[in-house]
Length: 141
Image (cartoon, rainbow, N blue to C red):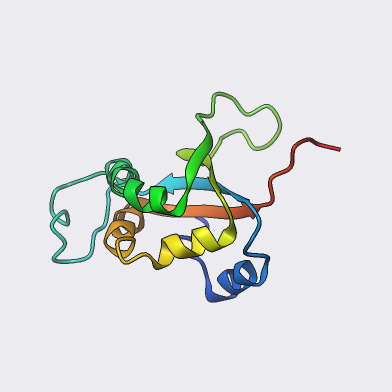
């Protein structure tokens, strides 16, 4: 497997923070799951035998109140059916786009005190991921 990306590097997060914080953003999420979730030792779900997909479902379930406070919501989600142009196999288990009213809202979400106990499910679930900030456009020109 290629290098695992689960949480942002300091360098990448600094680039994110240097961009305008008062404009709407869309965040492309590409996620590949671990076969089996790996919770920290002592976590209540550590020995439950959850798959990465199970742990990610728990993350998406428990993140909802935090997302709502941040004004975040999924604007698009899809399941790959066939690769038309590109490598033979699509390597992502989850593909979706989250919208936030502005970057400050996203920053507020990750600093929300209720975020830390929830993100542990994502960290347990994910083998690697990509999270890419986009400025939404109305059309392609």
